[in-house]
Length: 468
Image (cartoon, rainbow, N blue to C red; front, side, top):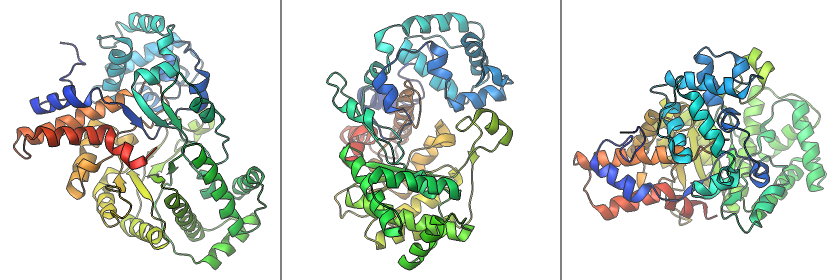
């Protein structure tokens, strides 16, 4: 039997039925990814499988370094064949790592190759993949549509023109909606020079002379409205820590005036600034029916030598920790709610030891007032938790502390056009988990309820939640 089949990852009959009859063929809503709208619009042919698979994939790069591969064959200028051979050698050593499964799901689902990649057959597999990549159904737009993607949301800076999103929306022969996500990292910039550069560019973009805190908020609101007009319904934030420090309007005004002079703030002042900006943005999102994503807990660019050599997003990031997370998170959400601006919110934590902390805090702020089930969501296993163990932990914690049936499901968080197999991976894990409950007699084998639950988590809850 081949590795990838309808039984793969699913160890019980109820789960296999739910997967093959319900989950497998459902469309995908990829509400958080790092594909670029420009690359989708330009729709260029991939040179080879090395470009498609290895360029920009820091998950694979970390594994290759651990396998003793020199950087020249990872991010360097080695020929494509050498890089692919190095990856094949690494695959052999990756049993237990989700990369092993993702690799073979992609070979099966996109290239119809059932063999497992190894140092013995790498050349044959590379040649067969490269041959197929010349076909039109391996262009970016075709790969997205072959993956049954209904909607995908890119990640975009607040000053982006969103030109390519608008072009894609008018493209009659491309049915997938490509929508922007508002990601205002620059507002939380600690470097005074970079912060002032952003304020200057924001002023130019909006035509608002930003000389006060009130004018800053007006300029930000103008950009939020611009994104909204292009179809954006989600924001995203990536703080290292979730911290809260209350600051009244006069204090916010004074802090901003100091930032305008180029003054560096101390840690307590930065905490107060971040809190005030978060609360103000949340109200804007709430007023427009947006969802706010918060990905927190990543310590980035830890290897200073390699950061200088190869730059950001290259595989030198780690799981972070923080003190007093529960108090800070509850205070932040409470401040947003008290300001009339707690929007639909999705929290992703990188440190799995905080799963119950996050899920229990979320439960404090659930409300049915806006007609949305579970408006606060405990987001899917993210990054270092994007594994079978991590996903099962997240699903179990969500079921323990909330309502799994209302979960909005999986996303790719990827820069790859063939990473949609992660949705398939998640669906197999989900069906195995719920099927196991059935098999052990922990829940009834009520097919109507079970099938509705699977459809909801895989796609329908996200449709209702985001209202694209």
